[in-house]
Length: 125
Image (cartoon, rainbow, N blue to C red):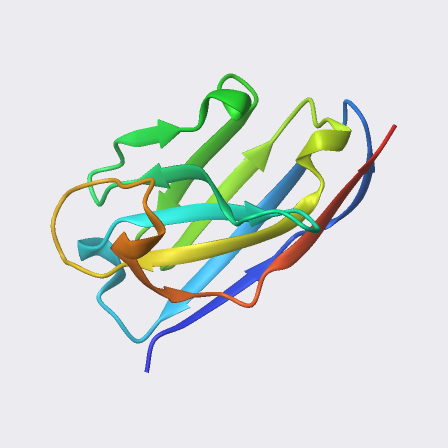
């Protein structure tokens, strides 16, 4: 059974930083791409960042230069370092693991088959 557990969310002032973690189990972590998505109230879940098993990275435009995705295969954990946070970044953040085992990244929700429970990030102005 694949499990993804996010942590690290919280309340932060605009301009502040947070680091999200996602601990994975139940799959050979090092052989799968991982992604971060977010969902604000009343909005669709949207792509934030993805990382391939070889650590190639891909970001949505609104977070480029502010967020960094990384992974530690020995710990089966993916991270999202978020700097210069803005009120528009307020959302529940979800990590996900890709459905297929190959060295790729994807911004499409359908490419992922397991999701964490989410962690709330709130940025105050």
